Length: 115
Length: 116
Image (cartoon, rainbow over all chains, first blue to last red; front, side, top):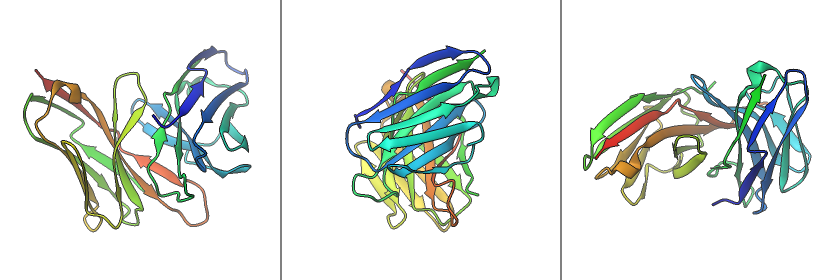
């Protein structure tokens, strides 16, 4: 158990509403990631963070923003949710010593449905 | 852009067999390759990580190899058990100059069923 929690675990929302997903880690890992998993596409990187207030875009970042104001929390925000953002969202962490090319450990996921 | 392919997409074998899952990647400038298992409705469990300087890693009945020159990795499962039934994912970590897209690129997985 890598000490990662995600909240909420399930959420149903309506198109056009803002949604924020939270990833919390307890082990002081430097790197945090948000992925989405969809049938037929597998897992794809949305955004990642390499330190407090340091973030960058991944492969599928359009429509998403992130924030990391402290080491343990990485927030993913959908400013105006669309049905295409219905997915399972996973947070991951890596790097206790600062090396980004280390194993990544995943949280339990958040299942988001946008109606 | 890194692309990762896993073959076969699904595999069903009787209990006790040794089996090999295949993973191929297009960009040999890979920093590491990681194998995961995912049970239905669950998150990903890390199985093995192979750094680019390594050729293989072992954990219990699992052995993973990495051949950067051919763009291939294999996951060998010895003496398979029904509890090994899951989807197995491989993912490569590549660095991209200019930033962006630093993270794992995943294959779509091999759905493995071990018949009792």
